[in-house]
Length: 84
Image (cartoon, rainbow, N blue to C red; front, side, top):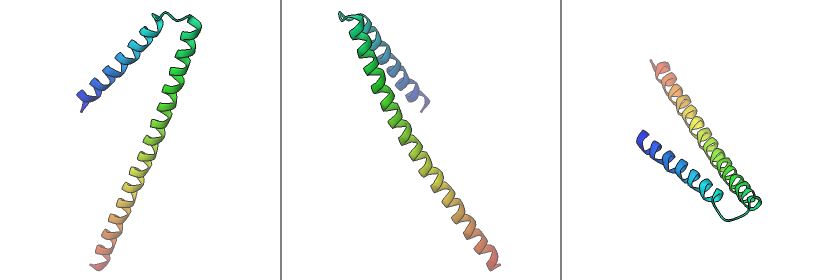
């Protein structure tokens, strides 16, 4: 699993660096490049916010589900103990 994560982040970093280098060496003016970089950063930040929201939502579902399972098991154990 760790190897897959490392590979993913390696490609991600490589892609970002390639994009930045490509923009810096493009024949466009500095003003156009800065505008493009701002758009890219805004898009990237927007996507990370969406991913962050999705992760938080999933985390909440998992925690709620685990708490409910614990409560259910506790209830079952208490019922078994009351029978004895």
